[in-house]
Length: 171
Image 1 (cartoon, rainbow, N blue to C red):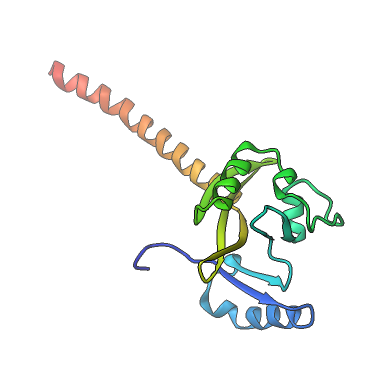
Image 2: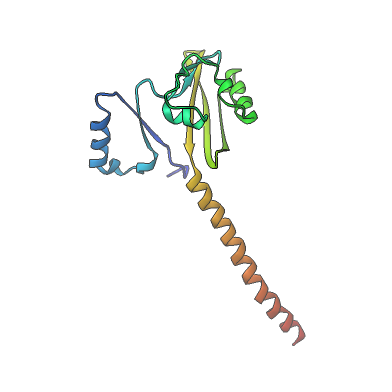
């Protein structure tokens, strides 16, 4: 509350305990946390690349994000080849070349995403990059609608006030 932000909660599970863990959280109402920012992922499925830009692991959601088939094996492939987006390539190269972390928003196939590229280190040695992509389409659309509504209300209020002000000056 102090910083007025919500921190997502990432919970790593295994194939064996994933369903039980998710059910446990559901049964306990996510311990008061917002269910939509609690992200469960199975070991070995978090999208990561090494310092040379090769894919170490990639989940199906990230494959779909890049427009690939979920069945496609991308391990060991150049991550820069997976997307032709100039913004993606520029930001990823920056993190690979030493920038600690970059977060940006982008549109992919009609959906709005917030992408975080986080450099990973073991002691002082850079070991790779963690890729986190949140689909923020609903929040983005709601914010746009709020702005449009506020703009319309402001315009509708100004019109009669201008008329009243004009009549007041004449009197």
